[in-house]
Length: 332
Image 1 (cartoon, rainbow, N blue to C red):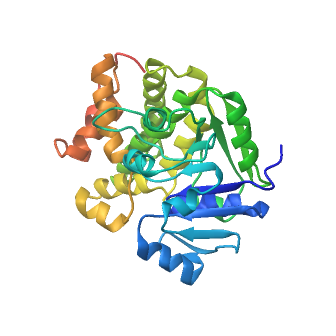
Image 2 (image 1 turned 90 degrees about the vertical axis):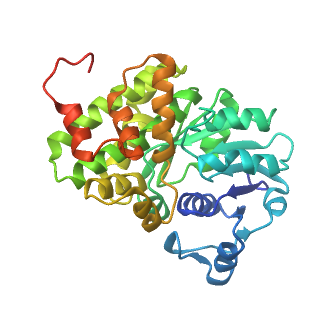
């Protein structure tokens, strides 16, 4: 399949959007990188580098930053949505997409009020467009640096998933195809909550045993929720589930891990988020997961404990003690 004359829009010039734009620009095609912040786009145009979010990677000449959404979308056959999940609806309401354009969702979260996945929002606001979720163990700085990585392109539209996989495939970025859109999205969202749990454990100075137990139990919770929402069990034992969890919960590059680490060290959440300077999707998603657990009658103790920690009703040590206390477990 050839994309020689097609153009791509990447919406969101944070670290992940910029990394994906750099990746897509490698084949020499036209890539337009949009951001709603005029000063951010002005800096990208002047410096030809995202010094704020992804320093050290020069923007090639075929990558065009713009603050005009219409300019970014004009003629684009593929639109990559890399804004925070809470902003997906706002962007799509404003967007005027080319007929038949593939929408690639790189946002990972669950709306804490409506409990919608990004694909739910997209299907509602951009009907008729193929929707593909792109997810996996992908830290932006490593992808931008060309360190080998892999991802999954998931959609109920097999042809669209294949098109997106082929667009993103590179020598150092292998993209697989899945038909489990819900499972891949749930994995990408819940791993952020679990990464906060991993960061809390590390911030408290606990060892690898503690963190491994939290992650293993958390993975079971991820799968439990995903299946309840219509995903496939096996999805959570692949790149978009355990793969993404390993990368996000173990790396100091992970924003969500850094939130948890700060909490474990005794810092307060507003200060941590201010210092971070970017959205940590696990914070609102934890609340959404706790609500979904109640709605579906699910036992999700790790995720629910993270939600309580973020609300301030538990201290980190109290939260870990609750999860590790000596009592008969309902389920692993």
